[in-house]
Image (tube, rainbow, N blue to C red):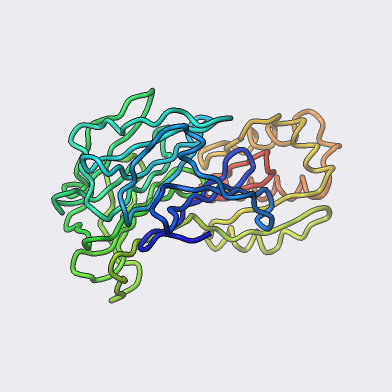
Length: 325
């Protein structure tokens, strides 16, 4: 596995499998390998051969990928008309399409950043005229016209031959965009909760500098605690009281089974404005005697979170509790 010069791989989790895409050193397209455990990887395959289509790829650019409504979307720079192309994957790869957003012209030797946010695909790119960073969104099968971010993020500018990166918070409520500053003055970021109104740009590290023809990347990260049976909730409680966001991984069979019977497969959110009785009823139902020590501990943490006006998100697969802001 050899990467093309001045390119970066991208990864995405789809159907419980980690996919890694990269541009090969032969500049002959995008290749992929996958893994279910992070240790054993499948044989590298050419995406172009799987799509059954001859494609052109702009040199010194990187692919980007995102999962949206049950499909994996893969994007790449086309050699033609400084545009972007994409294909989707469910059980097989679909025919490539153009990102048909009006006035989309991406800067040479830069790549797009994609993320799912508010049930849409958000695609960010640096403009061909070095005239700023732009976005377009995809929903219901259509691309909206590109929108410049400059008016929304005052003073924003990008270093030539670098690319933006985007990621969402753990609970999906906030989108963050990072980029390399125009004066090689480091990595900057801005966040939004609605995709329209953005926070004032901030430097990530004071006076840091970025390697020419490089990019940025980011992930959402929170502290994780683990408990199985008879767990000690002291540390999660302290984290909650100190205002920290964290994830609680629960693995006890009896506890997981209890909540599967209560919530089914759906994600459950306890909002900061919920009342205590509603939280108790939602967690315990009509069978409080079946609650073990871990269930009782999770109930106590949830009530404390509501008291502190914090949100709690319960995901069933994998089973974990996220205590957010």
